Structures are given as C-alpha cells and as structure tokens.
Length: 95
Image 1 (tube, rainbow, N blue to C red):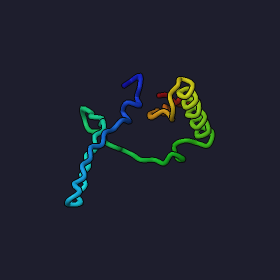
Image 2 (cartoon, rainbow, N blue to C red):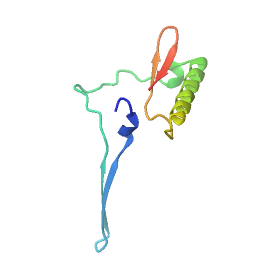
Image 3 (tube, rainbow, N blue to C red):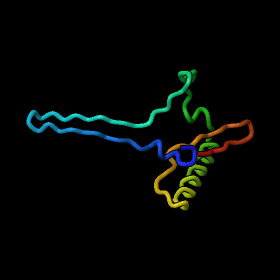
Image 4 (tube, rainbow, N blue to C red):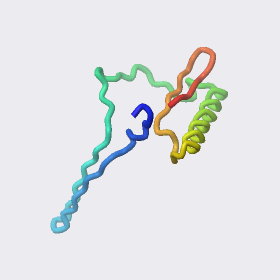
C-alpha cells in the first residue's frame, strides 16, 4: 500500500434485487484506517487562513507535478493521497 496507495481507493458493492417484493439490498465494503488510538481534531482552520496566496499557488503547482508524474508512470487519474508538510521556510507536497 505504501508504494501503491490507490489500492485504498478500491471498494466492493454486493447487491441483491428481490424483484417479487421490490426490495433492493446493498452492502458496501471498503478499506478503513484503524488507528491504535482514536484521532481527535483539536482545531479546524480554513485553507485560506493557513496558507497565503503564494503558498496556495505552490501547492497547486506541486499537485500538478504529481499528476503529471503519475501519468508519465502509466497510471491514470490523480494521486489518491498526498500530504502537505509546512515548515518555517517552505512547503513540500508528497505522496
């Protein structure tokens, strides 16, 4: 999964249609992250309040580079997961 995070985007739908009684049943299966301790959101800030306009432009450019790299590697679609790591001097965007 670390080398191919798109595996986490796969899901399964099992459905059954009871045509006599007009009932349709659906079951959805998808991977879930299970953490050893529950994650707690301590504070929510808007994207615009965290990053200034130049940082937002840099993030957009970095994501576009990731998309192009993925396409050049023969995979279609955008990267399913990425992380933005802010530091005091710069930003980095990674998968």
